[in-house]
Length: 362
Image (cartoon, rainbow, N blue to C red):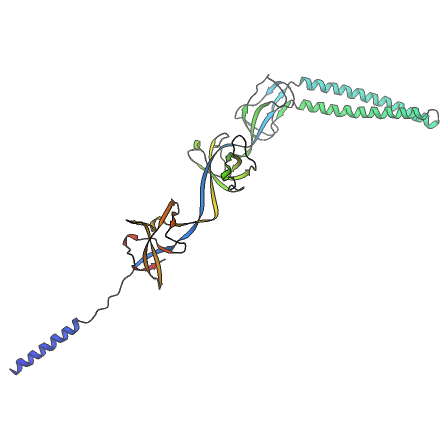
C-alpha cells in the first residue's frame, strides 16, 4: 500500500511537469513581404506633331542667258553632274558681236580724234606762250583736246561693255551640282532671263514645309526634328530647323519653315515627300506619370498601393483608387487621387492587401 501511494505521487508530479511545459508560449518570428517602390513625380508635357514637306537641294540655281539669240551649243542633260566653271551652253551672239565691232570702230575713231586735237593743242599752246596766238585760240584748243579725251575714255568703256555682252551669251556652271531640269534645246531662240535649265547645287538636302499659326510659336531655330520619307520605307533621318519665316504665306496660310538633314544620303532626292516630326515641350506643364505596372484594377476602378514608411525599411501599404489619363511611353498619366512625392508600390500588386505591413526594397 505504501509503495502504491508513492508511485501515484510520482505519476502526479510527472503529469504536472509535462503540463507546465506544454503551456509555455513559443515566440514566432514574423516575416514581412518585400516591396519595390518609387516616388511619383511630374514629367514634362511633350506634344508630338507631324507635318508634311518636300525635299529639295540646299541651293537651286535657275540657269539663263543674259542676252538674246539662238542656242548654238547646249551641253546639259537631266541628271548630269557638272563642275564649277564648266561651259554648259552658248548663243550665236550676232547682235553682241556686231555691237562689239561697232564699239571698237568708235574707239579707234575717238583715239584718232584725240591725237589730232592733242597735236593742235600743243601747237596753239606754243604760239600762245610766244605771244603769237590769242587766249581764246588757246582755250578753244584746250577744250577740244579735253572733249576728245572724254570721248576716247567713253569709247573704251563702251568696248568693255560690249565685250561683256558677248560673255552674256555663255552659261558656265556657277557651282558643282546636278542638272535637275532642262527646258530648252539647241537651235532654240531664247530671250534674256529665260530659264533654260535648273541646277541643284550644294551638298545639303533640305525640307521645306508650312507650320500653322497655332504651332509656329513653339518651333525654335536650331531645334532637332526627325524626318521620314514614305518612299524610303520609313527610314528615319535627323534634321535641324534652320529657318523660320516671320510672315505667313498667303497661298497656304502657313508659316514657311526650312529643315536641313544632318546626314543626307543620295537616296533622298529633290521633290520627295517628307514627314517631319516635332516634339513640343511645354515648360512648367508637368504631368504626374507613374509606371503602368504599378496600376491595378478592381470592381471600383484603377488603384495603386501607397507606401507609408514607418522607418527601419518597414512600411504599411494602403490601397488608393486613382483616375488615369493617357497611356504614354513613360506610363499612365494620373489626373486624380495621387500627388507628386507620394511613394507607390511598383511590383507584386496581386499579392498585397490593404493595410499590410511590408519591408521596403530599393
